[in-house]
Length: 156
Image (tube, rainbow, N blue to C red):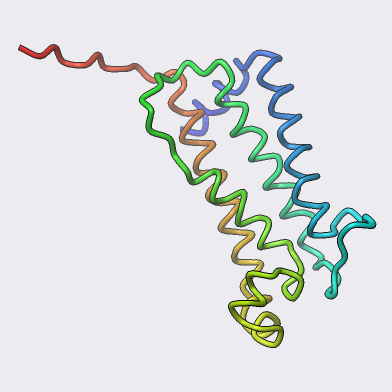
């Protein structure tokens, strides 16, 4: 399967790669600004970023960019059904790299001591889950690009 994926990626046109790069950069910036991984005057952090936050965000951004690129001029037949794992995984990245006590949803659910006690230790697992889901969605999309489609059976 990995050989098929690499072969399919090699066949991508330049437009797909450009869209993927733009989506990756956009994802990185959209997540890094509110989580203060990119210092800015609008958002701040009470807890400094962890050593793995930047790498997790970079990996998630690249995978998100590649996944977005699979939808550009895709040879896959549009069935109307979409896989939401990529969207869910990208959202998980935001929670994984964000400040545990700066996130209003976490504070409402757990309080500040609960955020530090229960949520902060789970953040690396959220990052791994996010990267895993993005990789799975990407592999699934790319490996099916050259798959032979079976025509729908005619109704009698």
